[in-house]
Length: 634
Image (spheres, rainbow, N blue to C red):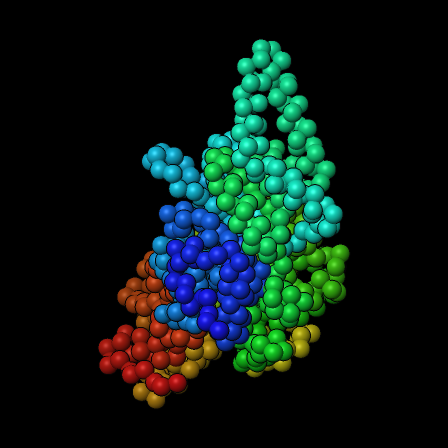
């Protein structure tokens, strides 16, 4: 049987299909997503849940003239497949392949590059305001999930939409809400009335007539509006959105393509703020993902038949696993330790803490700014809060860290998972800026472990420190140490580095994930007759200036290696110190350039940017005026 999907290159081709052909098309799209993600990894559950919704949107609206603005974007795989990227979908999340998220450089159908939550309504409102100023007529649609809707930015935007009364549509993709069949049937009946063109014409005419009635017209109008809202609110959760200035439509079945198409077809000519509430199921069409949507939120390659994830070398002893065990151990020793996350319980390794200490665990939802200030309140109340969060997501709470934590000098511990290059998720998820944005905050100390044992010691250090602190660690193996928690963890003197290898010719100051490749680089250099110092800096702030000064008595050549931004990183602090205190010092800084790093396997990206044993050895040879070493085959 011929494939419908093979005939669809772009949304214009989609419009040639009969409505009855869209359901089998959705099944073909779903099969392609499952096959590709099983091989490449990716965000499966959310993408499977949005297939019919995406088909209906592109079937009714005239994209890319009409703009669909995605929130987070991890649900948009079907969107990629339908917008001239089907033939490249097998390259998903691979270096030089398709991004796992909407990407403005990849397609005109992606108005924004996205990967963080709660942004779509603000961006869409901006597009709608620009449209009105330019005098054009395109439709603007924001698609946001129930998880993203809890973010304060989303509500700020909705409030502004209601105030400006802009013609735009917000699609709330809700995979948490449930509704009984009877209520659902009545809701569908009311929705049919509310989106009926004749009903809306009568509604507008009646409103205009009542407004003309002197003195009492407004009262009559408000009473009629309250009656309509009241009836609706008895049945469905739309009152909040109505009060914010939206026409609320829903909830409707997000997997019923004819119903979705009918709804979108009628509301696209209603020139006012509209919120369409659609109910979907994560993992739809793939039983393992339906049963365990959290496991299949972001998944590596897996066996399609069983749903079992294929083993990788990173599965054994990651920094996340070590942190998971270490924080439980610390909480067992200290009843004041509490843990906070922003909708990333599994990803940050706090699932075990939640089970052991449920009364001391807080998942605040996708609301990072709130998480930070909430933690400040916990600390002020005498507790020891640990905020476990991805490095890239902590950026969303920059002011709260400065104003509510550092200015108050409160003992909040930030554990930054996915610091540095995360690999296939790309620029929206790389944690490359944390050293730069944390190190200039007064009172903040910043640590980076080279292995699991260091992470345990640093967590103990942070919990015993009477001020704000951050521990950054990568999405990577944590070394060969046993994953069992070391009961002999000890406090590290703040700002003290550790010499790994004594030398004389050049000093390599390595931070966190760069310590191991620096030690490997030392072996390469020693085979060339070069004897390097290797220093595990441990602290990006404060740096160990006393040790650097003592090393300068033997060599004034320094190389700083860090898996973070070149601008504003630890190397900047070292360079500043050398310039002001060590006459004749030379410095070379190996870090990530002033650009957004693409997606690809972490090992490949590290090598590309010189953050490997060969790259570090090469830079040392260059500094010593020798010939660059050739890259070794790995």
